[in-house]
Image (cartoon, rainbow, N blue to C red; front, side):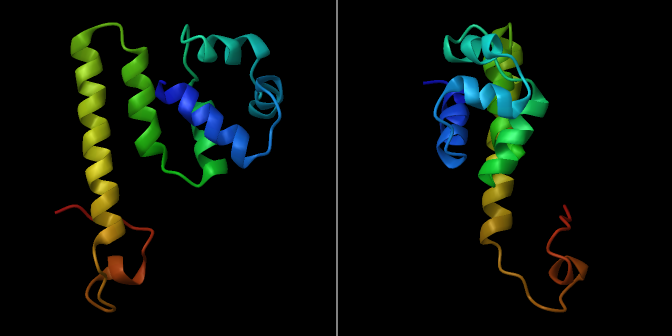
Length: 117
């Protein structure tokens, strides 16, 4: 199963949507577009991916590179997107696991800020 279908199925489940048509209506895309995703003939655009991620509470940085890798027309481009997906996963793990020490720096006071050294 590809990332587009996986994300769509998770979205439908979380939003209690009974059909792909209901998902299409909620995302503001055509039923045909969702049908193409399901048949692996197309992939959601970034704005649809973002809407689904927001509904799921999952990071866009995880899903978008995976879907763009599927969309890639050459192995070289696919490889770049997959590498970006790996980097995003590593950053998300590091941010989620890294302990914060109150008062250590401004990132500790503002957890919405990411500082890269």
